[in-house]
Length: 248
Image 1: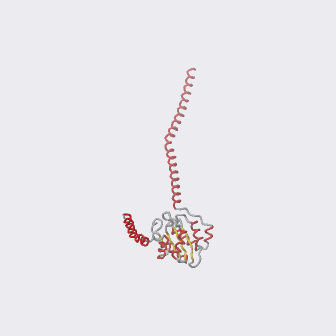
Image 2: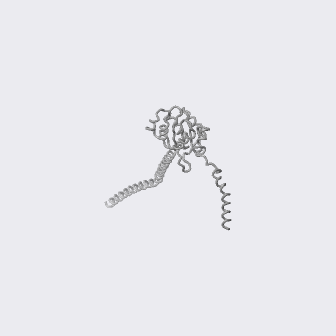
Image 3: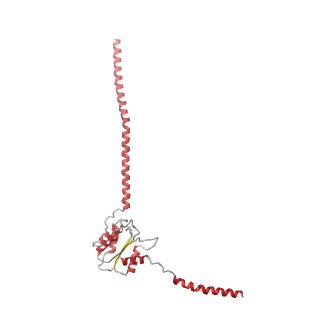
């Protein structure tokens, strides 16, 4: 009898819990959109998206300068200036470009670049006249220092893409300028060398100045010694002469 009541109670509880368990997947909150979805939504509103999380790398007028630069290409351009890797993720610039094209479904040149200009990618999907986009981007990466900044990198990219010599510039890049970090290190080294030279000069001058009294003392003593020798010679000569006179 007790076993029957126990089974009945368990069955009732299972019946009460089953509907809620079945409803829980349907009522769960939808997963947040991916990073590509977020960027694509921003590019639908404005074809130039610039992150506001890198104030040190991007000046306030960065969006306006980027728009003015890419306008010279004469084709639709979609630019996302954003950190290319976040929190150890695997979505880099090369991955984001096709994802953004897939989300937007619009023809044109797609560019993703980090705020510092250290990492980026560009690709064209239709959108009018064909441009040597990938050659121009490769040449830009070879010619620009790694910390040039996104605005300078995009400006150089547009200049190379419109020059008609993108492949030549890729194969024979101009000398890459020094990075800001390298310039600062070189300036520190030069400053250290100047300080060391001044220190040596000061030490040499101080040693020379401190040696002057000793040199003067040696000169005086040498002259005094010479006078003493001369005086002693004269006295000895007089003594000899006196002795000769007395003998006579």
